[in-house]
Amino acid sequence: MKKYFRFEELGTNYRTEFMAGMTTFLAMAYILFVNPATLALVGVEELPEGVTRIDQGAVFAATAIAGAVGSLFMGVIAKYPIGLAPGMGLNAFFAYTVVLGYGIPWETALSGVLASGLIFIVLTLTGLREKIINAIPGNLKLAVGAGIGLFIAFLGFQNAGIIIGNDATLVGIGDLTSPTVLLAIFGIIISVILLTLGIKGGIFYGMVLTAVAGMIVGLIDPPTGISGIVGEVPSLAPTFGQAFLHFGDIFTIEMLVVILTFLFVDFFDTAGTLVAVATQAGLMKDNKLPRAGKALFADSAATVVGATVGTSTTTSYVESTAGVGAGGRSGFTAVVIAGFFLLSLFFSPLLSVVTAEVTAPALIIVGVLMSSALKSIEWDEFEIAVPAFFTIITMPLTYSIATGIAIGFIFYPITMLLKGRAKEINPVMYVLFVIFVLYFIFLS
Image (cartoon, rainbow, N blue to C red; front, top):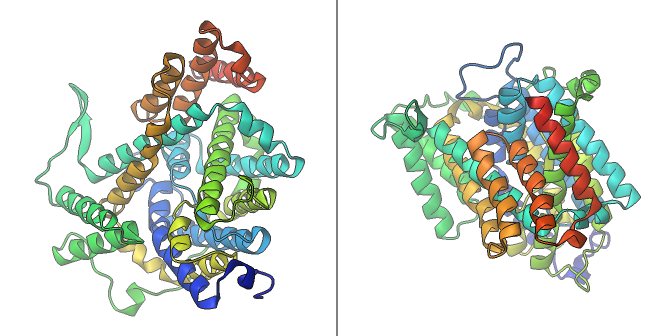
């Protein structure tokens, strides 16, 4: 095994890789509780007509399984110290845009995730990924990431009750004297302190401390005995295979845009994470990513597995840099992460203490981290600034990641053509322009 994972060449060992894997897992363990709460629309009382709520226990199990399988694929096939799990941003898009906004059943949404994963596999195996990466301008990639960050943070503030609806101004400040709001504010402060101090896994520990504080003051019912902490693995029956059963429902313009959004965000999120982690670990060679095809295949295959068992898009986690910082260099780090995800399957009873107030700080902090992409956008070029700004601002304002992407991708070729920079526009952008224009016509 040492030879397979090239321990000697990379200057690592079992102990270092184990500690790195555990560090990365703790840094991303929050997803085990945030993802089920997000997909089940916890805190949302009314759902669109004909839409049911996805089973939270099944999503917990699906999240752990997708994380385990995805991390195992990445470790064994691509040999990178990168953990995978259902991605933040795409789970919010799944729940709040597709299900809540469009009124599309979660079963059909899972079919969309499955379709995007299958397309991703084809693009990877045929080598088309490079052409697509080059087709989308870098500024728009950055804008999408930043916009999703703002959208996720907005969801966090809303779930916390810090931001509420207001008939006069659309939104306004909530009741800051409410005990549940104060608990969420406590969680934000604790999480900020932990991350500012550079504590690995600060988001996860912040959730733990917030839940404990909630139990102490009587806002959250504490688990009773060992059965309230460790229990049987939740059944996957409510979600398993639904993506295949409803695959025939995805052939609409609306679902085409949904699938493109799943594919687009996952594609570039994965590419960015791979480069970031590989660079930190010193694994880049001649400014190129070795085994990039295998890494992207592992990511896309994990998405297919995740959709099959019942969760939104599975993707590579930038929190993997925490494990690299702890010394992780080989794929064995990812294998350790997979082992921890499998072990977490037995801790589903803890879902009862992870309320909306507990998960809200995690959403807000993730939003902060994703919004860092704003600094790299070329704001001094107006033809770039307009589509980038529209992409970013319309995601939270329209409550839709897809709408933000669509508006930005419509304005980009317009401003670039008017500026005389037509040669810089990839033909793929014109195709996307037409698709997104049709998307808005269809919505109207």
